[in-house]
Image (cartoon, rainbow, N blue to C red):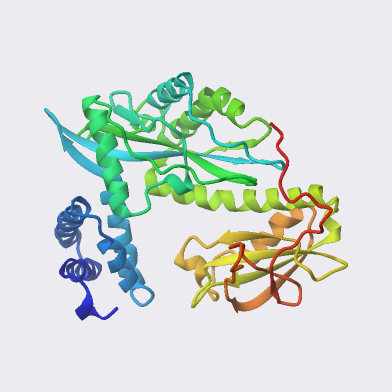
Length: 394
């Protein structure tokens, strides 16, 4: 979009970001950061808008250094805030991801019982938050789709939960209903909390000086997992569960995104072998990068050795601009990593297609098309005798 058509606030965001990018001293950095903090804070409190996201779009792909500067500040100012209530408090929005996968089918989500919520809240207060911190948790475990979908939404949630933590006054918080999850084999669930502490005080349990931070952090995760395992073992019977370190909202969400990809891929490959009664050696996999001008995701198509018809597929989303670069040297090769994951579950014949394919989807059902070994993008079609739906273990 031409600069002349951008709003005054977006243009000002871009000006301040470029000024900060060019700064040569910490003192100047602090000045420009404060200017950005005030402007971004105003935008987050105003009517629904996507001014920050628009500014970020303007910086891609030619001003990546400025992009990284602005996105870091946008995340920081949406996942943290200051609240005054008899004293000044620092507030941080925290996410505790729980990754789950199965060779059968994930159970449908159910609301937390009061005893489960009380157990989770007590464990969070004891093992994650600093001893003197005030804490407020969302009353349910949510999925990726129910997370805030913009910086402004994240800032609003931080403010709402932060006020609850500081004042103890619980008010309903609107959460998007969970969409249909039938057939899913791997997913992440998130415990979302706000930690409020008197200004300048430690936020997390591992910041206290009782032990070295690295050791204390690892022990906190171990204690957290041990405390909440009974609840999640019951909710997700028959599933493999991976408890991730509770951390600041954006860092932990990105880590969950990164770690769920191989779990989803391997769960799909194992399910296909079971459902189709095939050994890994009977299956061929083909990988291609898909997108418009850059890779937005890799698609993995599965065929048998006897046919070029795609019978199943899996999507590996791209999570950073560095991953999207086809020629980015020094980073692990994603198709090679995908091949390694497939080899672990017995599928060793893997073909990589060069270039960029269009991310085609079916006009009728919305299913993505996947590549076969000839490079054709095809609708996945299982043989009629195979039950497409994963089985419930539960």
